[in-house]
Structures are given as structure tokens and as C-alpha cells.
Amino acid sequence: MNQASTIENVLSGILKSGLGACRIGGSKADPPEGVLNPGRPRLMLTLDGCRNYLIENNGMPAEIALRRGETLFAGTSCWHKSINREINTVISLIGDPQYLLIGIKTDSPESFLHSTNLFQRHESVNHPIHHILRALDGITESRKDCTVPLNNLVSAAFHLALAELRKPDETNIGKALRTYREVSNYLAENFHHDINRESVAKEFNLHPSHLSRLFKEKAGENFSDHLTRLRLESALILLKGGKLSVKEIAAECGFGDANYFGKVFRKYYRRSPTNYQK
Image (cartoon, rainbow, N blue to C red; front, side, top):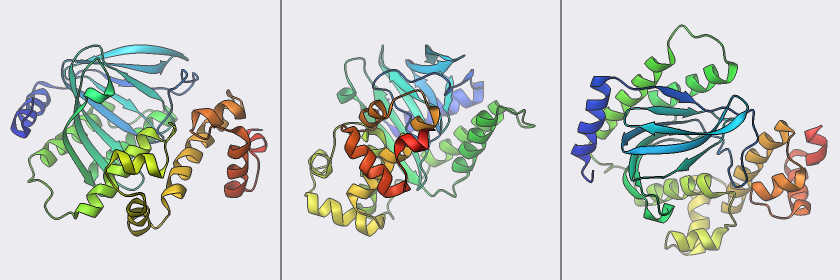
């Protein structure tokens, strides 16, 4: 599956035959060590092979297997972890606050370093898929009945994604904007690790100063402020859960030191993490 036309045919065939079961991730159980909630609604569909996920199910961590045509929705408050037990290809629709990401990636069991990005496109937050992700997020979060079955919304989202696959490659987006979006997505996926401006710049073969200018120009904020904001947003979710200590949350969100975490938290929210947690 290394050609766009092949991917289109596979997705089209799955949609014509009908999507399989849609699993919904939960947020009641504490995430296992090293697993964080990215704070963005995500909808994943297995195109080829089998992708395993660790999710919350009935208050307990559980591993599920998503085979060809099956989907998983993880809302803003939900955590999940991908587990690759065999070679698989998955299309992901991710609703970032600043853009919509449509990505297709092949993974192997060995390591994330063996991942191959087959397709990636960033769209406006006004894209219909982004609205569907928000609707799914609201429905699953409230657990209320909906007049439109979830499967209909999921199917609509991937039909729209198929239409995007059939569009020509992005030729009207500048290199700087594309780089910013790629780095921004990388940060959203890795903010809980020990990363900083220098390590991220090296990852993308950029000069640290250029990376700073890029974020100032495209996001209107410093690189360090952007990274800190991602970490704090995740920390807020964990603090609301009330199941982890401040020290544990600091470590889980990439701050490392609890005292530094407390200092940064008070700067942004005018109160301590402990006080917020009460």
C-alpha cells in the first residue's frame, strides 16, 4: 500500500461494503504509565492488517483489536495507546484546535521508528470532518441518545476523507506553513516526553532560531509557550480526574519536576495545582 490510488481503492471498497464495529474509548480508568490523553478527538479506521489499542472499557484498561474496516473513536477526554502486533495501515482523523489532520500511516511491530507516513493533509477547523469529530465528542462525552446513529457520522467522516484523498496534492500551501503544521502535530503527539526546542529542531533538521521564528509567525506564540500550553492542557484533564498526585501529573505531562510544574501552573492559572485539584 504505497500508492495513493491503492489507498483510495481500499478505503472506497471498505466504505462500499460497510464499516465494521465502532469502538468508543472511555476516560473513567487511570491511564497506564506512559499513556497520556492527547486532548484531541480522534477517529481511526484500520485499512489493512490489524491494529491493537489499549483503551478504557467499563472502568478498566483493556486491549482491543481493530481489523480491516473497524473503527475507534477516542474523544477529547479519552486516552488510548496504539499497539502494533503485526504490520498494519490505519487512517486517522484528528481534530486539533487549530486544524484538522487527515493521516494514513503503516506501522510495524518493531518500533514507531518503522512507521511510514503514506498520506498527510491539514485542513481548516471549518472542514466538515472537524464538525463531525466535535459532534462525536459531544455525544460520547454526554452519553446521551442521538437521533443520528454514531455509525452514520463515522461513515460520513470517512467518505469526506476519501474525497480529500482524491484531491490533488497540496500545491498552494507554503513550505513554512507545512513545516509548522508538521512540527505542531509532532508536539501534540510527544509533549509528554523530554523534548525541547533544540531536540525538536534537530528532529526536523531545522535551526532552533528558525523554529522559534516559525512559531512566532504562524502561531503568534513562542515555541516554548506552545509546548507549555500543551502540557498544561493535559495536566488540567489529569487534575480534574483527581486520581494522580501532583508529582505524578508533572512527570506524566513532561514537566519532570513537580516544583517547576507548580510554578508554571500558578503563572498561567493564578492558583496552585493542589488547589485546582480540590
